[in-house]
Amino acid sequence: MAEKRKIGLWDLVLMNVSALYGIRWIARSTASSFGLGLGAILVWVLFSFIYFVPNALICAELASTYPSDGGLYEWVKEAYGKKWGFMVSWLNWTAKLFWYSSFLTFLTVNVAYTFGKPELAINKTFVLIVSLVIFWIVSLVSTKGMNFGKFFTSIGALGSTVPTTLLIVMAFISIFILKREPASTYTLSTMMPKLNMDSLVAISAIMFGLAGSETTANFVTEVDDPQKNFPKAVFISAAIVASLYVLGSLAITMILPPDQITASEGILVALDSVAASLGIGSWFVRVVALGVSLSVFGAILLYIASPIKMLFGSVDEGIFPKRLTRVNKYDIPASTVILQAILVSFILLVTNLLPSVDAIYNVLVTMTALTSLFPYIMLYFAYIKLRKENPNKERPFQLSKNDGTAIGLSRMLLVITSLGIVFSAAPVMDTFKENLIYEIQMIGGALIIIVAGLAIWNNYEKKNKSRIN
Image 1 (cartoon, rainbow, N blue to C red):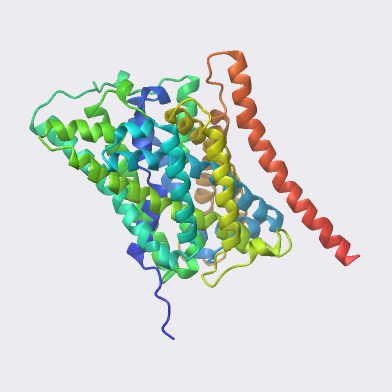
Image 2 (cartoon, helix red, strand yellow):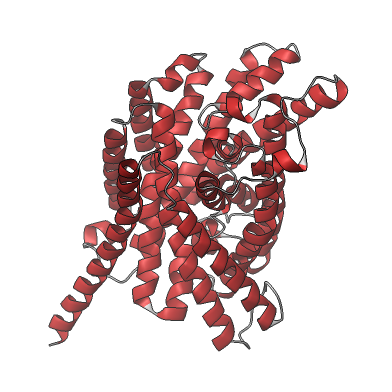
């Protein structure tokens, strides 16, 4: 029987880009309604250096030092034991439930543009039906494993990076070669982020947009020469992703002023505008929308398989019913994929009650930003402990050979992420009543998820003790 082909360096780079780069963040971060406007450009630059790169390199070190498909689970378990390994997997998975829903909303907007029907992008019924159909299709595809799914994630990475590259190139041609007037004025004053509640929430969401370096670590055993290729892929993909976010944010604001950029449609409106100014027909935006749709498809596929494999495929037997942890021949817990599809369908149905597509998208992204940052707190604590307690352990790749430097950088990330969690829950509504409801949703929802995870673990321990007795 022929040996299964391993995931190579460039397969891994494309998987990383698909997981780490989201073209939607360019429009969302630069929209005035989001709180940053032109200030997003400096925030992307700053957080690429102080957050994204060191976080990616920590994940590269841990993946090369502790190579297994457990990813975050394995690293936290190594430092703090199985209970906290379970909790980090639980928090990572539950955060993704809301993330899928926001991503699907963005995907359906691009599907509408692909078919030349942009008016459908604001039709809630269309968004709901297409989101449900696509998520069930992607869920079923994900049960075939990432050796099969890498085809879609590779296409997905190109579907996101190519449109961004086109946006950047076309914007620069329009402004610097054809000498058209830019839509925004770039001065230190206009580009300085305003320090208010809206911008603080926006900064935490940008941190979420830069997170995800740990995702492909859940497939490290499928990678060819992981100790060498995983860190190298992280370096390459980090450079690509940071450049796309910074230059893409600059390009979109050259074409549209921040007060005309919407979170869900901004990229396509900007491309349509610059294409028209260059004499390119409407077909161009339809092709780009197809590419972006493929990129979202690939990213969802990767994120469906990864947290499920980490939580239900790695934890001890008995925490969840056997039917949820039983893996198929592709090493994927297929029954859990179906359960997740049911849960996401429920979230989509509930959020469809919100007044508009853009409101649905914004609420889902904000809710995701809070819960998704908790696992990184546990990651940095685990990294610090492992570096302190195992200074002589062989590390094929290291963030820094100096333990003090590595631990110092991790502590910096710990502080930044903690602030991001606090910022994401900042009150941003117009009235006290609206803020009270908002805080209950944000903080109350996160607490329910944490308490539920601890309850599942405590129930598991009680069952174990009763068996022993």
